Length: 412
Ligand SMILES: Cc1cc2nc3c(=O)[nH]c(=O)nc-3n(C[C@H](O)[C@H](O)[C@H](O)COP(=O)(O)OP(=O)(O)OC[C@H]3O[C@@H](n4cnc5c(N)ncnc54)[C@H](O)[C@@H]3O)c2cc1C
Ligand SMILES: *[C@@H]1O[C@H](CO)[C@@H](O)[C@H](O)[C@H]1NC(C)=O
Ligand SMILES: *[C@@H]1O[C@H](CO)[C@@H](O)[C@H](O)[C@H]1NC(C)=O
Ligand SMILES: *[C@@H]1O[C@H](CO)[C@@H](O)[C@H](O)[C@H]1NC(C)=O
Ligand SMILES: *[C@@H]1O[C@H](CO)[C@@H](O)[C@H](O)[C@H]1NC(C)=O
Ligand SMILES: *[C@@H]1O[C@H](CO)[C@@H](O)[C@H](O)[C@H]1NC(C)=O
Image (tube, rainbow, N blue to C red; front, side, top):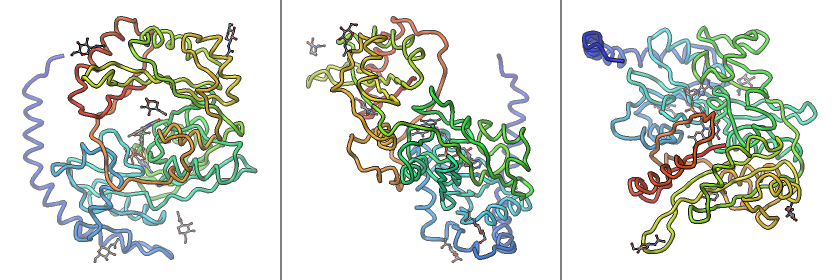
C-alpha cells in the first residue's frame, strides 16, 4: 500500500498547529484538575497524600518505580503532569471525573509492564492514575476464590494463595512483577495454560469504574462488558479496581526441569520435533523451548543453546516416563527434575535458583533494568529445520549488538 502524501502532510500540519494550544491548556488545566480532586468526598481517605506533582521530591522515584522498560525512561520520554497514586476507589472516581471535566488524558497504570510504555507515556498532556497502592488480595479457600485488586502483582497473588493453601494455584504469567490490572485485561497466559487456559478463563467477577465514575460489578455491567474487559485490552473500557479469581487445583508437589542442548548436541532436530510433541503431551505437562546464544569456549566461539523448560502437575517419575515415551531424544532423567510446591514452581519460572525463599515473589525493582522491544506471535505450522538454522545464525551474528544481554525468544 502506498501512502498518499497530501493527507499525511495535512495530518502532520494539523498536529503541529494544535500542539501549542494543547501545552498551554495542559498547564492551565492541571491546577484546576488538582483542585477538582479535593472537592470530591473521600470518606476516611483524603486524596492529598496520593497526589504527586513534579514539585514533590518523590515524584521521580514514584514515576520510575513502575516503569519496566528503560526505553521509556529517558530524558526524551514525555512525563505526566501529575501522578495520582489512588489509595481508595473514591480517588479513582475523582481522577476519572476531574480529568474528563478538564480535558486531561489519563494513563492507567498497574504493574507498568506494558511493552510500549502505554500506561505511563503519551504524546498529549496527561496524568497517571497509578494503582499500586490498591493492591490487597483476599483469598477464600473454602470458596476456591480470591478477590485481587488491580495494583497487586502476580508474585503477590501467588504468594497470597500459598499463604492459605498448597493445593490451589492460579494460571497466569511467569513474571512476578507484572500487574494484575494490565495482565488480566489482556488475557494472561502461563505455565498452566494447557491445563486451565488463560487467566481470564478463570475470572468470574470484576469491579470497574466507568467513564461516568460509576462502580460496576459483573452483574451491573452485564455479560458483554464483562467479556470485553477480559482480553479486550487494558484501559479500553474503564478502570478495573479488582478481579475475582476462581482458584484451580494443583498437587502438593509439582515437577520442574530445565535442560539445555546446543547446536553441537543436535538441538535443531530436538526443537523441530518439540513443535509437534509439546502440543500433544498430556495437559498436565507444559514444555517451553527458549533459545539463547552461548559461548562454546573462551576464544569467543559462540553457539545457540535451547533450554527445554518443563512443568508437570505431578511427580517426577511420571513426567520422566511420559517424555521417555513421546520425546526420548530429549533424554530427560529423574536427576534433572525438581519436585517442589506449586508456589516454588512460580519462583523457578521467575528464573531464581531452586531453594530461593518464596518472599522473592514480593520484591519489586525501584527502576527499570533493561532496554527491550517485546513482540509476540503465533506459529500455526511447524517451522522447517533450515529456518531454525538461519535463526541460530542470525542470533549469533547480532548477539554483539546486545552485549551480554541474551536475545530472548520464547515459545510454547
Ligand atoms: C518481563 C515481562 C514478562 C511478561 N510475561 C508475561 C507472561 O508470562 N504472560 C503474559 O500473558 N503476559 C506477559 N507479559 C505481558 C503482560 O501481561 C502485559 O504487558 C500486561 O499488560 C502488563 O500488565 P501491567 O499491569 O504490569 O502493565 P501496565 O503497563 O500497568 O498496563 C498495561 C495496559 O493495561 C492498562 N491498565 C493497567 N491497569 C489497568 C486497570 N486497573 N484498569 C484498566 N486498564 C489498566 C494500561 O493503561 C496499559 O494500557 C510480560 C511482560 C513483561 C514486560
Ligand atoms: C506533594 O506536595 C503537596 C504540596 O506540598 C502536598 O500537599 C502533598 O501531600 C504531597 N504529596 C505527597 C504524596 O506527599
Ligand atoms: C475505600 O474506603 C472505603 C470507606 O472507608 C472502604 O470501605 C473501602 O474498603 C476502601 N477501598 C479500598 C480499596 O481500600
Ligand atoms: C573457535 O575459534 C577458532 C579461532 O577463531 C577456530 O579455529 C576454531 O575452529 C573454532 N572452534 C569451533 C568449535 O568453532
Ligand atoms: C525409556 O523407555 C525405554 C524403552 O521404551 C525403556 O527401556 C527405559 O527403561 C525407559 N526409561 C525410563 C527412565 O523410563
Ligand atoms: C534455564 O536455563 C537457561 C540456560 O542456563 C537459563 O538462562 C534460564 O534462566 C533457565 N530458566 C529457568 C526458568 O530456570
